[in-house]
Length: 435
Image (tube, rainbow, N blue to C red; front, top):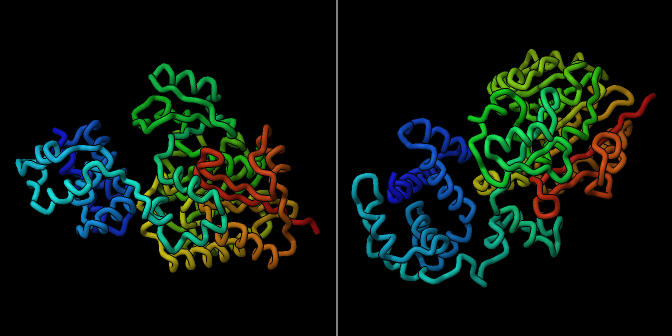
């Protein structure tokens, strides 16, 4: 594809994303599957433009509003070509030729927009903190409460693209061997800062085509997510439940920690997500996992599991605010009503899972959220209602399950991109008293 055709495709894909309620990556996946003629390099170039516009949405929108221009995908892309790529009007005009597979010709309004933006920076001193940091206005008080004067730094890192983290499957290999194998395939991976199983690649790559991935030696998993799974401290012979297992990322890590020994239940309310995990389990060589869909029948089964599990991991449904650098569209689809519904759901799940934990066992609550009401406040509410549980100090659990320097000193794990170079994660490890 010519550069002009890539721009046209980016405008088309942004238009599709704007019309859909689904996450941008799902819309993009459908878009490319139905256009097999678009090669891998072209897909990468189109995706870079689209995700760049999503990451810069608030700032591009601010400029368009300041110039009284409608904020549509075509106008946003034109503004991005000027403000980010520094292209002049002649170059943009050549791409917007109106020819086959190219964007429609520039209108007088388009030319006025380009002229007004020429030489400008994408940042402007009049922009508010939410615009500069690329997050919704309504969430600013919550983030300011958490980060205080560090808010600009944290949001600056959160709006940028994340690296690619891999978890080495200890059932099949070790980190040094996997790193060497990646090097032979042309990928320079560095050990992650905290996770003893992690490797980091500097940029996105097509890993699914690599032999290490096909053979189940590595899985894509952010370092923060790896740490949450390690803090469960699941051991061979344990009975463990991954209550909100989804597509099985943490379940795989738990199975490896258990060395395929013991009982591991992967539970979820969505059968489709549970089904997608099957191939991952098979590829990784995992065979101690039982999947449970929590429909009516699954819920009946769950009621019979009182005080059965040594470890229960609740990786709760949440706002996903800690993953905004990977899913930049998610922040704009989140509302205060959504957040209220999520916190209510988190509370119900915590109350529901409390009875599943053995006396002397542990309940691990985790989110990929930055927001205190989904994290510390949920645990405070839970502890007030369930006196049989106490918080295990995070450094103590870290020393037992991971070792090395603990990144936090308080009772909970709280990770952020700016401070720890991971996605935003929260985790609390709660111990159930013995009678």
